[in-house]
Length: 116
Image (tube, rainbow, N blue to C red; front, side, top):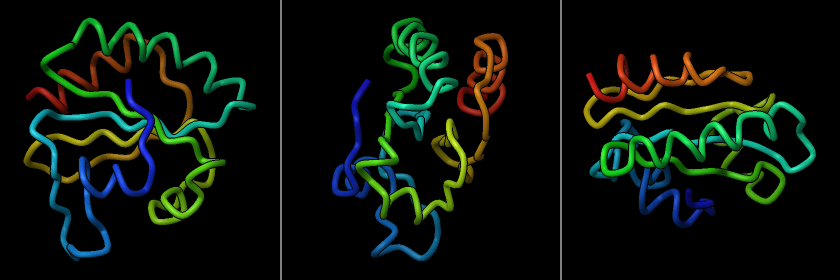
């Protein structure tokens, strides 16, 4: 799992400064976890995301964005509570989900939205 800065986000996910319409820059679907080190629910989700990044290696990418470090990026997506996850399929618009999702729910989202 890779931590994204605003610069790497624009390179690997979406350059919102250039594009008005959503245009995903990656070649695998991804999950972006907006989190903070002090957030209890974020700490509960982190090991699940680690497991999923192994289980779905070569099928999806999981990124993390530290909302404390990347406040401009968090503001660009209107992140108001954490954890918030952005599910980004290859060809469709991304879907935002707030709150700590259990592993079964994350697997369902991966299969139904990212890998459909």
